[in-house]
Amino acid sequence: MLYSVRSSAVLLALVATLAMSPVAPEAGNVIFLALGGLSIALMFRRAGEQVRRPIVWMPLLGLGLIALSYGIGAKSFEGLIGLAFFSPLFAIWPLLTAAEDMKSDDSSVLIAILALAGVAGAAVVAVMEVVATGTVRAGGGVANPIHFADVAMLAGFLACAGLVGKVTPWRFLFLLGPVFATIAVVLSGTRGAVVAIAAMLVVAAIGLVVLQVVSVKRALIALAVLVVGGAVALLLGASQFSGIQRVLIDIGEVLQHGVPTDESTAIRLQMISGGIQAFQQAPIFGHGPLAFVNLANELAGVPFGSWPHLHNDLADFAASAGVVGLIAYALFLLAPIIESLQVKSAATKPRILILATTLVAGYFIMGLTNAMFGILTVTVSYAVICVVTGILVTQANQTPKA
Image (cartoon, rainbow, N blue to C red; front, side, top):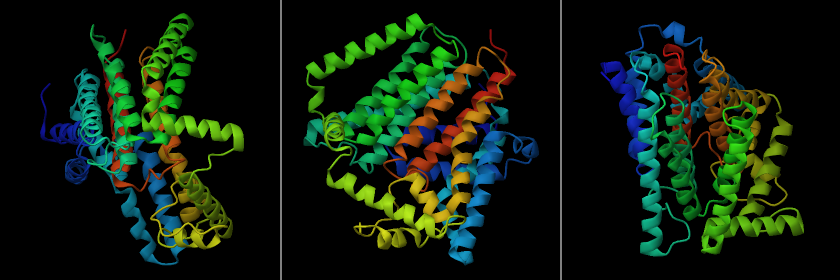
């Protein structure tokens, strides 16, 4: 594969975010943003054509709606400062325009290899931290354990991009991506990510069967293998890991009390309650990006203290940007799915659609227990999901599949 200056910028951005970010997120973020800015100078060809793609215009429209809400909600141009939280999404358009030069049919394999390397590194880091320190929240040496788990989870499933393109005898090795992601997530002790991985597997399985990518028989065999494998893992002591323990405890408390009763969950419920009340006071445009958390704290039944966000994407968008912000949130999340529907190949379309839907589902579910959009590392991860989806769709439409 030969790379021009433009496609080299895209390649380096993928290396930074897929291979580096799971173990060195700060460096990956800086490189991605820098290359996104550089690509603006390289997008002079066919930029207008690219903007008509859902993966470009939907995030741009969402950003425009956020700017409108933040300006009106904050009653000042200072509200536009909040757009900085979404800065990685501005890189989608220039990077996809620059990616036009990546015309080889093995882009999906390259993406998968980079993602697999990144999530394997995250799994190794998590194991080493647990062995060396005995910690129950691995990933703290890399980032916040929650964000460490988020990035590892998304990179692990992005490795499945290797199943989308050219058929190779060793393509199923990319299924190790979700396996490595599960190791990193479980050792991080992040309950939301554990639930998200389970949900992503369910979404992927349903998609594979409904879209007839695999037969029901094979799906049932795979399910049986997962169940047996999970049971064996529990018998061998997997339930002793903090992530599994916390999820099992939560399940027990939900069955007994309706909701988990730990302090962390209680604080999050107060945040959501305060966010809903803040939304009700300004339902159209919200309160802007600078005041909504403090207002939610004042309105909550029990004050939850000083936090940068409400640990819930829906509450954050609703309280800060109102209904207009929630529309923007939907545009962000749906962009990869709508883009995947643009694939012309009947054989490839279901695979890209399943991959995009699975990644979006995981991102959405993680956003129910912790902020995702607005946190630099995981916002970069979502921008990369959009860029990868765009590249896969372009590749599929350029190279007919059998």
